[in-house]
Image 1 (cartoon, rainbow, N blue to C red):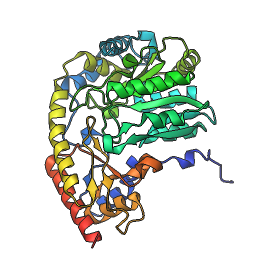
Image 2 (cartoon, rainbow, N blue to C red):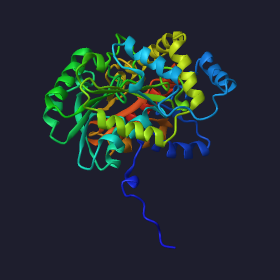
Image 3 (cartoon, rainbow, N blue to C red):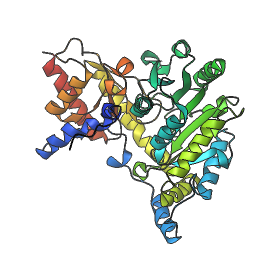
Image 4 (spheres, helix red, strand yellow):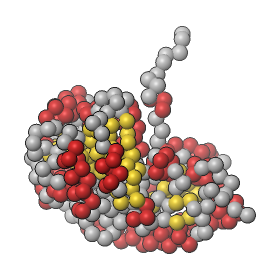
Length: 403
């Protein structure tokens, strides 16, 4: 039988965050212990889903919620999401919400409803990889806009303005940001919204999956800051409620002038066609949104200590430097020694660090060549002793290779 051809776009998919686990897994098979600073999954470290949220899954099964749920989400969860969004100033109704298999499915559905071949979507540079991958799978063009490293990776609004064209369909904002940990304030969110308003035929995507995970201040609601614009907000249970494997998220459409009418219809048709999200985990998310949030404070207290340790150590190592993140649990250090060292690029640096010191990071170019190159991403989720050991290894590695 002749080989059956795949869609060539599918063969171009890369996801650096998990791709780097392949060589790490091989080293583990050989008996090595890997210091993992690569994946944004709190439950792989010393965090766990709050007990009352886990109990809600069992309760849901006992209540008989084991069949299909409504395509857009169970009523209890839709009510809870509406209340939560409105408490932050996003004036939406239940019918504006669609529950999804995490934010990644929401993004896939959104791009399938929005993007045609040749369309453009502006994404932060560096960017979370699915924003790039899913746009390309539609034959569209992800256009990275500059974020200013020296100013804490805040978006360069002038660069956004210069890159908006007649083909621009959407501008994406990830706040707090993955991979940099940057926290954007109201001023820059409003400035980005003003550019979208001036363009006149695009909308804002606001990924707020880390919105309550901040070290100083609050994450502004993009929809509240830009009340007259079409804004689609993405959020979910994964990060704030420490349940990434449950795959429950949502998109909330704020559409004051009806310009998202066709996109909404396309989203609703997709929602029905794929049946529903996970019914029992939807119920648990409802309980999470309406229950005690004390675990968030405890989580951020632990992360603050780890952030401060990582920031200090990375800036002490001769050859690396980093900005102080304002939210989430990421850092995106610069490899200052790259051009003086033996490495061809940031990917080779990260893979050599893994092989020689068994420290697993994610190479920065995996988050976009233009703005990610010359960096690497780490998570600050591991315990302090693990972080310290990893930075000791990184320091040895750079000193040895720079001789």
